[in-house]
Image (cartoon, rainbow, N blue to C red):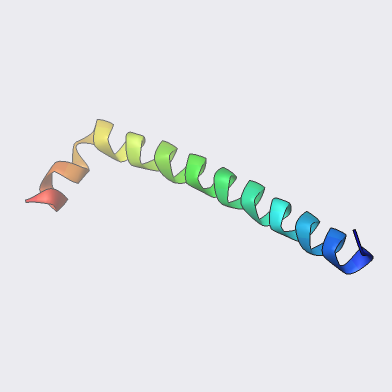
Length: 44
């Protein structure tokens, strides 16, 4: 693989890891809100 292709692949993997971390954090925040009962009022 050429250097540019390797860099592109590495950047793509780093982006994916970042997105997964963000998704985990969002799910954690959503679970906390659901525990407080706040999302029920948002869904109606």
